[in-house]
View 1: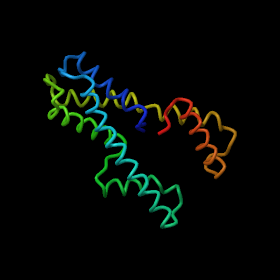
View 2: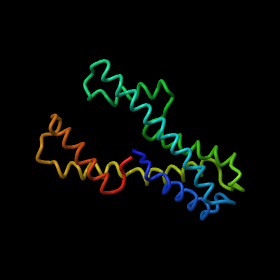
View 3: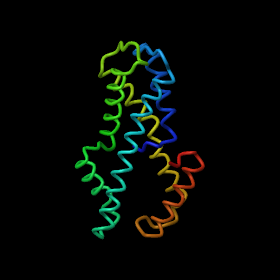
View 4: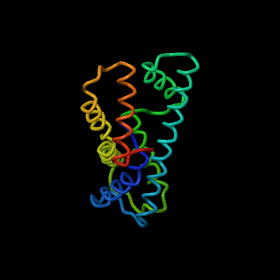
Length: 171
């Protein structure tokens, strides 16, 4: 799961549209309700970037191999109580639900918390699943290189950035 800043407005719009059309919530101001959701998603993204930077700094300071990045990021995230992956999606949905409870722009909530959370998780997952698709496309383009080497790593990063820019996903 990778949340791109450029996708946040679309996710927020999709959540409000889906929940209102399913009559799970009633909204008085659609735009403001979307902004409420965007603020939660942006906060998650901010916390994730902070965690990533701290993990990179630790790897550099300790002279660890870059292959340790995921493990170090998980340790930093645990210390900061920052949810990653599927747990991050659940965290976002829970925070959005809490925002709904306090928002002046959500007039009524008709659905159970669990039903709302599941609907939001499905929407967020649908919008963030692009990472696997991107990875597959990059691997197809660089299939002539041996995976794991420094040349492969460098080319993977370069091609991934090209594809992200082409699709408007660069943060």
